Length: 336
Length: 112
Image (cartoon, rainbow over all chains, first blue to last red; front, top):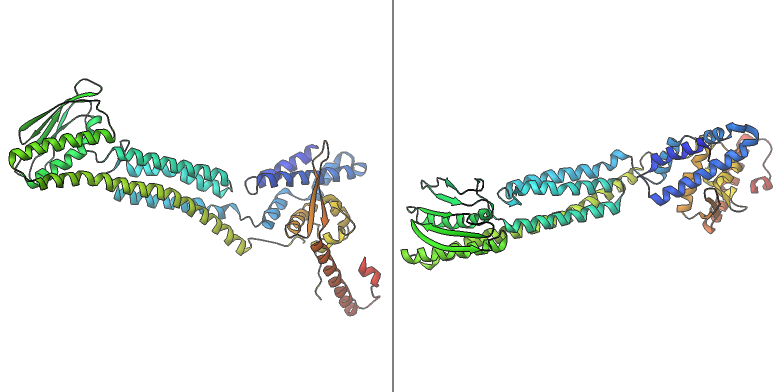
């Protein structure tokens, strides 16, 4: 193939890549190359070494041909298809702000849920860009990845309910958090106990609200790592040694274990104070509520958002193309 | 008068005798119309649109050592469109001739 013809084909390909299907583009380039080569062969007896140049000149500028080819296919200009990723970006910002207001106290793998949602929206934006370049297969793959990220976030979110506002390193620490004029002391362990503290905190809050002249605290010790943790529960200065908790882990099993520990401790305290059964049931409900509410909300929100946003993206993309066809974007006649 | 210069009609006329590839059609049209004055490549959007509309059928011919060649033939719809264009041309030519005066075009010339 003559160098001039090769340059023309390369230039034409660069103008059409990503704006028409690959197989169609390849066929179109073959057809163009065949025309140019045939024209150059016919012109060679007359033009000699300038035959290819003349053939390309007679064929016309590659930019003009590319534009008219795309116009004939009603492919809108690039800036028109930018509407899809722009709308996707707006949706991401709106959803992130909504998640911030609704789930700002939910942690996923130690990070705030809105931040995790924002990160999960990156593949969503990539899917929007892929759709804008008519890479439908790539868009579907990226969107499926988004769904997987959302599902993983949901699973991670179910292991953690509420974090305390304050953390320390590996040693036990004491926090004083004034509330309703009553100081509340909490001594907790790093990491492994963090999630359990959320439930215990709920229990203590309820006890404090009901018996706000009482002082409730709980102390623990890391013990011998990694899975043996001696725990003592102190309620109103009344110690309830719970012994060693073996095979201590994070996750739903640990939360259930801590829940039973706390419930047993409160039951003993309740018996010693003559507290009615209703308080314990109220505490159970309060502890259970964050689980079901957050799990259900995060599940529906994340999974639903991923699928709905993908459908919305595809709809916006198709709408943009329909509008462009309706406007007959710069369609012109083929002859001067 | 309904007829006006139209690349589509010229393409249909160029293919009435048999299959041609794009360059062959451009050679036949060269010198007969100013439609391709801006470049022979402008023929291809027209060909592809006519193929999409069902007026033309295309076949690919394998050429060893060269790019594949795409040839076009008229479909039944294309032949009908050609006949319609021919009738419109006759009407157009008769109308122009009656206004401008001078020798009338023969029927054979209109059928060419």
